[in-house]
Length: 553
Image (cartoon, rainbow, N blue to C red; front, top):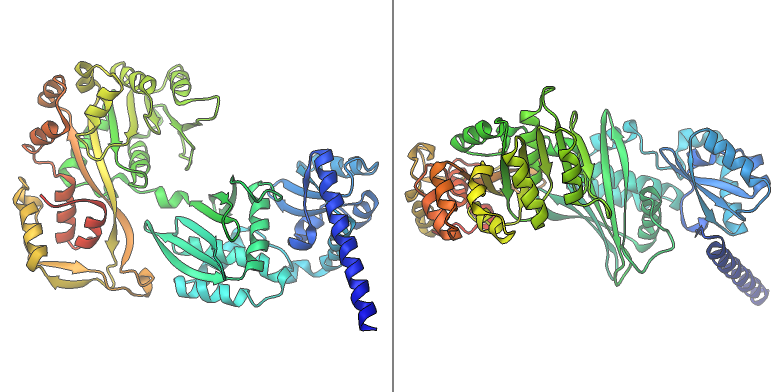
């Protein structure tokens, strides 16, 4: 009897595989995607959009919905009753994405109609990205340990419940501790979840391969990615609402040795809404920059590597000068955060920085922000705009403020006009701030004291040095800072405000070192000096500043 049962099961498995293979082949014929609904969760909110009678009659089923985008499983795109279903959905303003499925897949979806009577209470198999659900989830967490515990508990749930809850926990957890990125990384024996906190990755939890497969399918659907592509990278996005705030999630998927690796970038507008006065500039530099950016024409350039906070600084500047009396246009690649009252345009394949800049100049702007100057044409046009009644904000990839001028020379810009066009050059890095609840005071001594005293000796404006400079603070770690010793980040800056002396000096094509030497005669701090002042004020630690800046004189 057992042998007969085994043979029957083998035949059923073979038949099922053949049916799935046929559905996959037909998907290629009709030019739509294939999906196996036995491997993904069925969203009962989507299922409600098509009545069971209509779904069975047209051999289809709505299995997922995000906003006004619905995923519809079909046995045949040419089924005579399918147009009626599509018409109903389109009349309700739904954008339909069709997927080819087998009969077994449809049967699984149709079985879920039995759950609709209690789906609202049970949330069975549903991930509802609602403001209320996310708020409730966020309030459950008070740090990484509580998120890890929740993921461990979710892993014990049945499959239908698990996939709906785990994404809720991952996203809610990331938002609760202000993580900028979520990393899901398959490894040989498990899948690792990491969050980037204040610029540094931190392990959160691990889960099994089956959960990863289900989670990956859900994320691909949410992000508008192809489900049946596993051997190349894909990028997509989706958004969620938290109160009145819309948070965009940018999804990147790449193939790996043990499965597809996922990174979700959390673009929370509140995370970048740093007031100009809280960027971290020392008072003199802040005052000078503020004076310059309120002028009717000129240019402010921020420099530094990727992830050094340049975009945050530019957005803070735009918010500082924004008023109903001026028109601001931004050209970005891509638009990451939306600014109220600002016209934002995004660079595309056939809409380049130079094309967008020329178009923007025909829109009668007062202020233009260019995400990055990468090409000579863009550099020249931006300089011309700054000389002809516009204020231009942009970024360059150089190591320090002085390096901006040789970089512009590399673009064949006439240095005789650079000093007239460029008002301010800022260089910056981001450092983590010490957690105020657990930081530990320690005497400044030994090599640390020698190093800091050398930097302090070069500071011309001694008023910025705190009176008690014999102690510094070190990180400890507590629940408030997720045991890292740090909470939040702040900028470390240096700046060159172009005056007549700098203008005359730049015209002679000086080297980066020459510009740095003349800048030292002013009272504006260099990045190493600004970092040391922040160390002495207990804002950050020596180790943290040394992580991003070489402060040795």
